[in-house]
Amino acid sequence: MDKINMLSLFLICCLFGAAYGYKTNSKPSGQKDIPDTWCIAKPNAPQDKLQGFINYACGEVDCGVVQPGGQCYDPNTVLSHASYVLDLIYIYRKSCNPDIGIITTVDPSYGDCKYP
Image 1 (tube, rainbow, N blue to C red):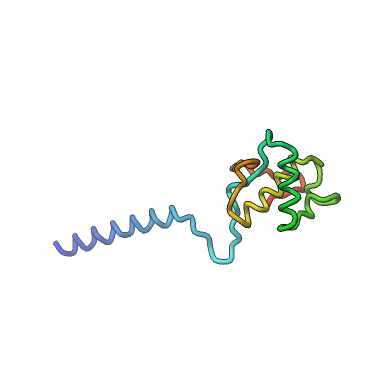
Image 2 (image 1 turned 30 degrees about the vertical axis):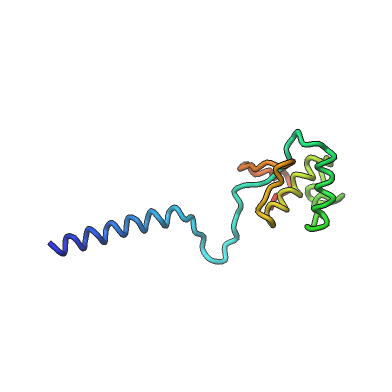
């Protein structure tokens, strides 16, 4: 009888361990974390607020990619540039500006412009 109880307990522990391991979504050490969400500009956000955010944020992060000649310069719109810069700040601060940004699960990368 004790062997059956021990076997049952062992199997239950294995099942919980497998379920817990599956849910944690752990990655092998050294593998880069790939984000599954991005922060992009709200399409209806005021242009002046978006530009103000770009001006502020580019003092804290490297915005070269949205500068002339950068991979994400085109389309040359405040909305497009603000989306990229919002995501840069989102990565470093783990926060999306709720006044002008929204969280998306759709990768906003396009062409040669790859969002981090």
